[in-house]
Length: 149
Image 1: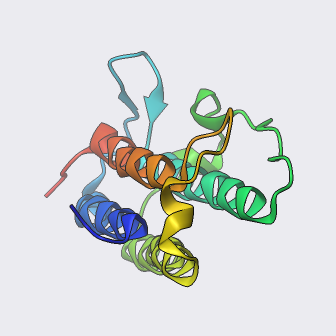
Image 2: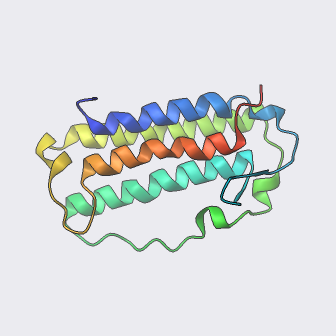
């Protein structure tokens, strides 16, 4: 097991980005997940980023000892017109920059706190370790588009 559970997040992001790198070959046809949600390359990148931002905000609130902000966005239920745009090599580069920075921020944030914080009981909320372990699931969004090489 990784000592710093925050390190799990950039690892999951890196695995997702290996798939993202193949998406300029996307044929423009949305993919439908097993649970009937629509996915495109742009939507998958958006969902990965949104999921990371949501949980980063949660971690910061927990560490500050304040209530977390309620989740009110439509998440993967929404497919916007922007989600349907062609996905280019430039989009890959932008996704690499955005997502790798978000993933790295988790690892750095967790490294900056006393390791006792990682498993501290947060009442009705998950522990920081549980949040990091949950974020391994961001790969699922990338897998919905898949490897298009």
